[in-house]
Amino acid sequence: MAVPQRKTDIGPPNFEQFLPPVIKKNYGKWKYHEVLTPGAMVHVAESGDKLWTVRVASPRILATDTIREHCDIAEKYCDGHLRYTTRNNVEFLVSDEKKLEPIKKELAARGFKMGGIGYGISNVVHTQGWVHCHGAATDASGIVKSMMDELMEYFESKRLPNKLRLAVACCVNMCGAVHCSDIAIVAVHTKIPDIAHENFKNMCELPTVIGSCPTRAISPDPAQKSVKINPDKCMYCGNCFTVCPPINIKNPERDGIAIVIGGKVSSLRTNPKFSKLVIPYISNEPPRWPKVVAAVKHIVDVYAANARKHERVGEWIERIGWERFFSLTGIEFTVHSIDDFTFMRDTLRTSPAFKW
Ligand code: SF4
Ligand code: SF4
Image (cartoon, rainbow, N blue to C red):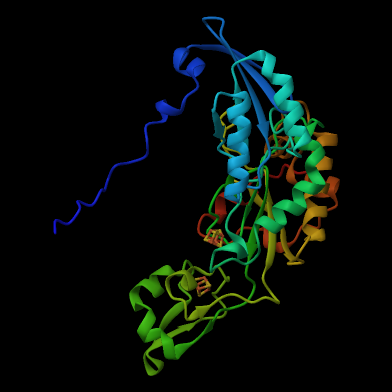
Protein backbone atom coordinates (compact mmCIF):
# COMPACT_ATOMS: atom_id res chain seq x y z
CA MET A 1 0.00 0.00 0.00
CA ALA A 2 1.37 3.38 -0.98
CA VAL A 3 2.22 5.57 1.97
CA PRO A 4 0.49 8.96 1.61
CA GLN A 5 2.98 11.76 1.20
CA ARG A 6 3.42 13.79 4.36
CA LYS A 7 2.45 17.43 3.86
CA THR A 8 5.00 19.77 5.40
CA ASP A 9 6.36 23.32 5.16
CA ILE A 10 3.12 24.62 3.65
CA GLY A 11 3.12 27.78 5.81
CA PRO A 12 0.04 29.73 6.86
CA PRO A 13 -2.76 30.36 4.36
CA ASN A 14 -2.31 33.56 2.36
CA PHE A 15 -4.05 36.35 4.29
CA GLU A 16 -5.38 37.94 1.12
CA GLN A 17 -8.09 35.34 0.72
CA PHE A 18 -9.63 36.46 4.03
CA LEU A 19 -9.71 40.21 3.35
CA PRO A 20 -13.08 41.95 2.98
CA PRO A 21 -13.48 43.15 -0.66
CA VAL A 22 -13.25 46.82 0.43
CA ILE A 23 -9.80 46.18 1.96
CA LYS A 24 -8.65 44.23 -1.09
CA LYS A 25 -9.76 47.05 -3.38
CA ASN A 26 -8.13 49.82 -1.30
CA TYR A 27 -5.08 47.92 -0.05
CA GLY A 28 -2.26 50.40 0.69
CA LYS A 29 -4.47 53.33 -0.34
CA TRP A 30 -6.04 54.45 2.91
CA LYS A 31 -6.22 58.19 3.46
CA TYR A 32 -7.16 58.62 7.12
CA HIS A 33 -9.11 57.11 9.97
CA GLU A 34 -11.26 58.49 12.76
CA VAL A 35 -12.10 57.07 16.16
CA LEU A 36 -15.90 57.40 16.40
CA THR A 37 -16.38 55.94 19.88
CA PRO A 38 -13.97 54.03 22.16
CA GLY A 39 -15.14 50.85 20.35
CA ALA A 40 -15.62 51.99 16.77
CA MET A 41 -13.56 53.63 14.06
CA VAL A 42 -13.82 54.34 10.36
CA HIS A 43 -11.09 54.14 7.74
CA VAL A 44 -11.52 56.26 4.61
CA ALA A 45 -9.71 55.29 1.40
CA GLU A 46 -8.41 57.54 -1.38
CA SER A 47 -11.28 56.17 -3.50
CA GLY A 48 -13.79 57.44 -0.92
CA ASP A 49 -14.65 53.90 0.20
CA LYS A 50 -15.12 53.44 3.93
CA LEU A 51 -14.66 50.57 6.33
CA TRP A 52 -16.09 50.64 9.84
CA THR A 53 -14.46 48.59 12.58
CA VAL A 54 -16.16 47.57 15.80
CA ARG A 55 -13.76 46.24 18.41
CA VAL A 56 -14.84 44.04 21.30
CA ALA A 57 -12.95 42.63 24.25
CA SER A 58 -11.93 39.01 24.38
CA PRO A 59 -10.45 36.99 27.25
CA ARG A 60 -8.00 35.46 24.68
CA ILE A 61 -8.62 31.90 25.88
CA LEU A 62 -11.77 31.15 23.91
CA ALA A 63 -14.10 28.18 23.62
CA THR A 64 -14.92 27.07 20.10
CA ASP A 65 -18.53 27.99 20.91
CA THR A 66 -17.44 31.61 21.41
CA ILE A 67 -15.47 31.60 18.17
CA ARG A 68 -18.57 30.24 16.42
CA GLU A 69 -20.57 33.07 17.97
CA HIS A 70 -18.02 35.58 16.58
CA CYS A 71 -18.42 33.92 13.17
CA ASP A 72 -22.23 34.06 13.32
CA ILE A 73 -22.10 37.80 14.02
CA ALA A 74 -19.55 38.33 11.24
CA GLU A 75 -21.79 36.37 8.82
CA LYS A 76 -24.79 38.51 9.72
CA TYR A 77 -23.18 41.97 9.53
CA CYS A 78 -19.75 41.71 7.88
CA ASP A 79 -20.16 39.24 4.98
CA GLY A 80 -18.25 36.74 7.08
CA HIS A 81 -15.21 38.93 7.77
CA LEU A 82 -13.54 39.54 11.12
CA ARG A 83 -10.07 39.71 12.56
CA TYR A 84 -8.26 39.33 15.88
CA THR A 85 -5.90 42.14 16.90
CA THR A 86 -2.34 41.99 18.20
CA ARG A 87 -3.81 42.42 21.70
CA ASN A 88 -6.32 39.62 21.11
CA ASN A 89 -9.40 41.78 20.78
CA VAL A 90 -11.96 40.93 18.11
CA GLU A 91 -12.68 43.36 15.29
CA PHE A 92 -15.83 43.10 13.21
CA LEU A 93 -15.25 44.72 9.81
CA VAL A 94 -18.37 46.43 8.51
CA SER A 95 -18.44 47.75 4.94
CA ASP A 96 -22.08 48.81 4.93
CA GLU A 97 -22.74 51.82 7.18
CA LYS A 98 -26.39 50.75 7.59
CA LYS A 99 -25.16 47.72 9.53
CA LEU A 100 -22.99 49.68 11.99
CA GLU A 101 -25.63 50.55 14.59
CA PRO A 102 -27.39 47.15 14.33
CA ILE A 103 -24.14 45.22 14.95
CA LYS A 104 -23.31 47.44 17.92
CA LYS A 105 -26.79 46.83 19.30
CA GLU A 106 -26.51 43.07 18.87
CA LEU A 107 -23.00 42.94 20.39
CA ALA A 108 -24.23 44.89 23.42
CA ALA A 109 -27.28 42.61 23.75
CA ARG A 110 -25.03 39.54 23.66
CA GLY A 111 -22.86 40.99 26.45
CA PHE A 112 -19.75 41.83 24.41
CA LYS A 113 -17.80 44.82 25.71
CA MET A 114 -17.04 47.34 22.96
CA GLY A 115 -13.98 49.54 23.37
CA GLY A 116 -10.21 49.44 23.44
CA ILE A 117 -9.62 52.03 20.71
CA GLY A 118 -7.79 55.30 21.33
CA TYR A 119 -6.60 56.88 24.57
CA GLY A 120 -7.79 54.31 27.08
CA ILE A 121 -7.02 50.78 28.16
CA SER A 122 -7.19 47.97 25.64
CA ASN A 123 -6.86 44.25 26.22
CA VAL A 124 -4.17 42.86 28.54
CA VAL A 125 -1.46 40.90 26.72
CA HIS A 126 -0.98 37.81 28.87
CA THR A 127 0.36 34.30 29.15
CA GLN A 128 -0.53 30.73 30.11
CA GLY A 129 -0.47 30.84 33.92
CA TRP A 130 -1.77 27.89 35.86
CA VAL A 131 -3.95 26.92 32.88
CA HIS A 132 -1.08 25.46 30.89
CA CYS A 133 2.54 26.30 31.81
CA HIS A 134 4.74 24.32 34.17
CA GLY A 135 6.81 27.31 35.32
CA ALA A 136 4.07 29.75 36.27
CA ALA A 137 4.55 31.65 39.54
CA THR A 138 1.04 33.06 39.25
CA ASP A 139 -2.04 32.71 37.09
CA ALA A 140 -2.55 34.90 34.04
CA SER A 141 -6.25 34.59 33.14
CA GLY A 142 -7.37 35.06 36.76
CA ILE A 143 -5.38 38.25 37.30
CA VAL A 144 -6.38 39.67 33.93
CA LYS A 145 -10.07 39.09 34.62
CA SER A 146 -9.79 40.66 38.09
CA MET A 147 -7.86 43.64 36.75
CA MET A 148 -10.12 44.30 33.76
CA ASP A 149 -13.26 44.07 35.91
CA GLU A 150 -11.84 46.98 37.89
CA LEU A 151 -10.59 48.94 34.87
CA MET A 152 -13.45 48.27 32.42
CA GLU A 153 -14.54 51.93 32.45
CA TYR A 154 -11.20 52.80 30.79
CA PHE A 155 -11.86 50.17 28.08
CA GLU A 156 -15.44 51.18 27.32
CA SER A 157 -15.55 54.93 27.78
CA LYS A 158 -13.33 56.81 30.21
CA ARG A 159 -10.33 58.39 28.52
CA LEU A 160 -6.71 58.72 29.65
CA PRO A 161 -3.91 61.13 28.64
CA ASN A 162 -2.73 58.49 26.14
CA LYS A 163 -3.18 54.78 25.52
CA LEU A 164 -2.18 52.64 28.50
CA ARG A 165 -0.85 49.17 27.74
CA LEU A 166 -1.22 46.45 30.37
CA ALA A 167 0.50 43.08 30.32
CA VAL A 168 0.86 40.02 32.52
CA ALA A 169 3.57 37.34 32.47
CA CYS A 170 3.50 34.42 34.86
CA CYS A 171 7.29 34.09 35.21
CA VAL A 172 10.37 36.13 34.37
CA ASN A 173 10.63 34.47 30.96
CA MET A 174 8.22 37.33 30.23
CA CYS A 175 6.41 35.72 27.30
CA GLY A 176 4.60 38.65 25.73
CA ALA A 177 5.00 42.31 26.47
CA VAL A 178 5.61 42.95 30.18
CA HIS A 179 9.09 44.34 29.59
CA CYS A 180 7.75 47.09 27.33
CA SER A 181 4.31 47.99 28.74
CA ASP A 182 2.98 51.03 30.60
CA ILE A 183 1.99 48.87 33.58
CA ALA A 184 2.80 45.18 33.81
CA ILE A 185 2.62 42.30 36.20
CA VAL A 186 5.49 39.82 36.32
CA ALA A 187 5.27 36.79 38.54
CA VAL A 188 8.33 36.09 40.67
CA HIS A 189 9.67 33.29 42.79
CA THR A 190 11.32 34.24 46.07
CA LYS A 191 12.92 31.02 47.26
CA ILE A 192 15.98 29.02 46.22
CA PRO A 193 14.97 25.92 44.24
CA ASP A 194 14.90 22.47 45.87
CA ILE A 195 16.85 19.87 43.90
CA ALA A 196 15.62 16.29 43.58
CA HIS A 197 19.21 15.01 43.22
CA GLU A 198 18.21 11.43 42.46
CA ASN A 199 16.54 12.55 39.20
CA PHE A 200 19.23 14.93 38.01
CA LYS A 201 21.44 12.47 36.15
CA ASN A 202 18.47 10.99 34.27
CA MET A 203 16.69 14.20 33.30
CA CYS A 204 19.26 16.99 33.02
CA GLU A 205 22.31 17.93 31.00
CA LEU A 206 25.03 19.32 33.29
CA PRO A 207 26.57 22.00 30.98
CA THR A 208 23.12 23.28 29.98
CA VAL A 209 22.07 23.59 33.62
CA ILE A 210 25.25 25.41 34.64
CA GLY A 211 25.00 27.65 31.57
CA SER A 212 21.36 28.48 32.30
CA CYS A 213 22.14 30.45 35.46
CA PRO A 214 22.58 34.21 34.88
CA THR A 215 24.44 34.71 38.17
CA ARG A 216 26.64 31.58 37.99
CA ALA A 217 25.13 30.27 41.20
CA ILE A 218 25.18 26.66 39.99
CA SER A 219 28.18 24.36 40.20
CA PRO A 220 28.63 20.58 39.83
CA ASP A 221 28.10 18.32 42.83
CA PRO A 222 29.99 15.14 41.78
CA ALA A 223 29.25 13.29 45.01
CA GLN A 224 25.50 13.38 44.26
CA LYS A 225 25.89 13.24 40.45
CA SER A 226 23.95 16.50 40.50
CA VAL A 227 24.52 20.23 41.04
CA LYS A 228 24.55 22.58 44.00
CA ILE A 229 23.27 26.16 44.24
CA ASN A 230 25.07 28.99 46.00
CA PRO A 231 22.27 30.62 48.03
CA ASP A 232 24.09 33.97 48.12
CA LYS A 233 24.05 34.20 44.33
CA CYS A 234 20.63 32.79 43.44
CA MET A 235 17.93 35.40 42.68
CA TYR A 236 15.18 32.83 41.99
CA CYS A 237 14.80 33.39 38.24
CA GLY A 238 13.84 29.76 37.62
CA ASN A 239 15.90 29.45 34.46
CA CYS A 240 17.53 26.28 35.81
CA PHE A 241 14.08 24.76 36.34
CA THR A 242 13.22 25.47 32.70
CA VAL A 243 16.09 23.26 31.50
CA CYS A 244 16.03 20.76 34.37
CA PRO A 245 12.69 19.88 36.00
CA PRO A 246 14.21 18.24 39.13
CA ILE A 247 15.38 21.73 40.17
CA ASN A 248 11.99 22.81 41.50
CA ILE A 249 11.58 26.56 41.86
CA LYS A 250 7.83 26.64 42.50
CA ASN A 251 6.62 27.41 45.98
CA PRO A 252 2.92 28.16 46.57
CA GLU A 253 3.65 30.03 49.82
CA ARG A 254 6.38 32.28 48.43
CA ASP A 255 5.57 32.82 44.73
CA GLY A 256 3.99 36.18 43.95
CA ILE A 257 3.82 39.29 41.83
CA ALA A 258 6.09 42.21 40.93
CA ILE A 259 4.82 45.34 39.18
CA VAL A 260 6.90 47.07 36.51
CA ILE A 261 5.89 50.28 34.76
CA GLY A 262 6.82 52.94 32.22
CA GLY A 263 7.64 50.83 29.15
CA LYS A 264 6.52 51.43 25.58
CA VAL A 265 7.32 50.14 22.10
CA SER A 266 6.38 53.03 19.87
CA SER A 267 8.94 55.63 18.78
CA LEU A 268 6.40 58.44 18.91
CA ARG A 269 7.91 61.53 20.63
CA THR A 270 10.35 59.45 22.71
CA ASN A 271 12.30 56.25 22.10
CA PRO A 272 10.91 52.88 23.15
CA LYS A 273 11.47 52.13 26.84
CA PHE A 274 11.76 49.12 29.08
CA SER A 275 9.41 48.92 32.04
CA LYS A 276 10.98 49.36 35.49
CA LEU A 277 10.36 47.71 38.84
CA VAL A 278 8.27 49.76 41.27
CA ILE A 279 6.62 47.10 43.47
CA PRO A 280 8.91 44.12 44.11
CA TYR A 281 6.45 41.70 45.69
CA ILE A 282 2.78 41.13 46.39
CA SER A 283 1.71 37.67 47.45
CA ASN A 284 -0.63 35.60 45.29
CA GLU A 285 -4.24 35.94 46.43
CA PRO A 286 -6.44 33.98 44.03
CA PRO A 287 -9.09 34.21 42.81
CA ARG A 288 -9.24 38.03 42.73
CA TRP A 289 -5.72 39.24 43.67
CA PRO A 290 -7.18 42.32 45.46
CA LYS A 291 -3.82 43.91 46.40
CA VAL A 292 -2.45 43.59 42.87
CA VAL A 293 -5.62 45.00 41.33
CA ALA A 294 -5.69 47.89 43.83
CA ALA A 295 -2.03 48.71 43.12
CA VAL A 296 -2.56 48.77 39.35
CA LYS A 297 -5.75 50.82 39.64
CA HIS A 298 -3.98 53.29 41.92
CA ILE A 299 -1.13 53.82 39.44
CA VAL A 300 -3.65 54.28 36.60
CA ASP A 301 -5.61 56.84 38.64
CA VAL A 302 -2.53 58.85 39.65
CA TYR A 303 -1.30 58.83 36.02
CA ALA A 304 -4.77 59.90 34.80
CA ALA A 305 -4.87 62.78 37.27
CA ASN A 306 -1.33 64.05 36.72
CA ALA A 307 -0.01 63.31 33.22
CA ARG A 308 -0.25 65.82 30.40
CA LYS A 309 -2.22 65.06 27.27
CA HIS A 310 -0.38 62.58 25.00
CA GLU A 311 2.10 61.52 27.71
CA ARG A 312 2.55 57.78 28.12
CA VAL A 313 3.20 56.53 31.68
CA GLY A 314 6.98 56.35 31.12
CA GLU A 315 7.11 59.81 29.54
CA TRP A 316 5.14 61.30 32.42
CA ILE A 317 7.51 59.76 34.98
CA GLU A 318 10.62 60.86 33.12
CA ARG A 319 9.28 64.43 33.06
CA ILE A 320 8.42 64.59 36.76
CA GLY A 321 11.26 62.32 37.98
CA TRP A 322 11.05 58.95 39.72
CA GLU A 323 11.23 60.52 43.22
CA ARG A 324 8.09 62.49 42.42
CA PHE A 325 6.39 59.36 41.06
CA PHE A 326 7.02 57.52 44.32
CA SER A 327 5.85 60.47 46.43
CA LEU A 328 2.73 61.09 44.28
CA THR A 329 1.66 57.46 44.39
CA GLY A 330 2.75 56.81 47.97
CA ILE A 331 4.42 53.60 46.78
CA GLU A 332 7.30 52.69 49.06
CA PHE A 333 10.65 52.80 47.28
CA THR A 334 12.65 49.73 48.25
CA VAL A 335 16.20 48.58 47.67
CA HIS A 336 14.82 45.98 45.24
CA SER A 337 14.28 48.72 42.65
CA ILE A 338 18.01 49.49 42.58
CA ASP A 339 19.56 47.54 39.72
CA ASP A 340 22.45 45.26 40.70
CA PHE A 341 22.85 43.22 37.53
CA THR A 342 25.34 43.40 34.65
CA PHE A 343 24.53 46.83 33.22
CA MET A 344 23.52 48.44 36.52
CA ARG A 345 25.95 51.35 36.17
CA ASP A 346 23.77 53.02 33.52
CA THR A 347 20.76 52.97 35.82
CA LEU A 348 22.42 54.74 38.75
CA ARG A 349 22.13 58.51 39.14
CA THR A 350 25.34 60.14 37.96
CA SER A 351 24.18 63.71 38.41
CA PRO A 352 23.48 65.86 41.48
CA ALA A 353 20.08 66.84 40.03
CA PHE A 354 17.23 65.48 42.12
CA LYS A 355 14.17 66.71 44.03
CA TRP A 356 13.97 66.42 47.82
S1 SF4 B 1 5.78 33.67 31.25
FE1 SF4 B 1 6.81 31.85 32.05
S2 SF4 B 1 5.26 30.66 33.11
FE2 SF4 B 1 4.21 32.14 31.80
S3 SF4 B 1 3.79 31.12 29.87
FE3 SF4 B 1 5.77 32.13 29.64
S4 SF4 B 1 7.28 30.61 30.26
FE4 SF4 B 1 5.30 29.90 31.01
S1 SF4 C 1 16.93 30.11 40.06
FE1 SF4 C 1 18.09 31.33 38.58
S2 SF4 C 1 19.67 32.34 39.79
FE2 SF4 C 1 18.86 30.64 41.04
S3 SF4 C 1 20.20 28.94 40.58
FE3 SF4 C 1 18.47 28.77 39.17
S4 SF4 C 1 19.17 29.83 37.33
FE4 SF4 C 1 20.54 30.44 38.97
